[in-house]
Length: 202
Length: 202
Image (cartoon, rainbow over all chains, first blue to last red):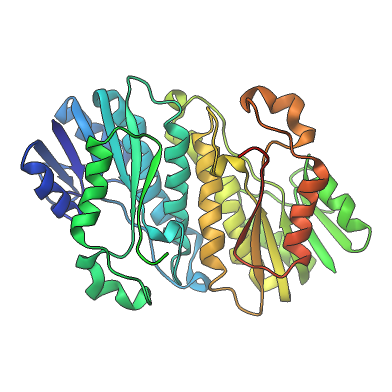
């Protein structure tokens, strides 16, 4: 299987890439590293990436950003960082990428626990994740050629505990192996329109 | 209580306005009608509306649009119609309006069943509704002065059946009285961060 992993060198992406590389052909896309360059916030860049690759069997997204800040300090433009990158970046991956997927292929997007259980400072990040959840449930009704789409929504991952634990009081870290399995379920499973939730104490 | 109802002359808004007018001072805001003019997609217009009104006790939003179309025909700009209007319009109502709410005041936003149970043609509308659900759950953690925020998410409403029933196969119409009660719960109840779901057979 030829699997494109956008953000495949990131904290989660590199574990996902390492796993799939054992048995599949993995192409890593990233803003500053990887096999092919892509800027998630720029649909022309997404189009150029797919043009350079030709057909693939699966698209995994482990990329996309959103601003974290006090709601009272968030400007309208601050919200647009997440809307352009993690939200519309993933919508554009599907919108453009569907024409580059082989029949029976799949998209596995990334969201996160904030969609369902936000913490302080995450009005934008939560909103973006929740938007993608509903998008996945809607777009699965319309994709053709047996193309599937799911999203992996994980809690605070083990490899990010050091940086983020103060923002997630009482959250049990999710082992990387479980996060990777979320993406395995998306790519090798048969469901569509599923939000693959990997939460611990909620 | 002084209640601002954005979209108070719309299909749902007029029933909500009629109800609250019996016992409260209602100010209707609309793009082309009402007591005060506002363009939901323009934050400067939202700011000007609040400046003209002074402090209010409750803000109800029954406005905001998103494009319905086949996913395969949706352009990036088509998605931005909903992102600018129903999504960021409501975020901006809260972002700007929080400074014009009396202590203990409330926001009651509008989403819809598509967030949880989308139908075909609604990739954008579903996404916007889902985004607002998560935004409400996130922002309630940060609002000060005992300001509450909730969202009313209704199924296909009785008054819209004639136009939309073909898009919602098998959906039981929601009586307008129940929809109005969703907004009553938001404005006069005591919860915050709640998605007030008014669905029938799902």
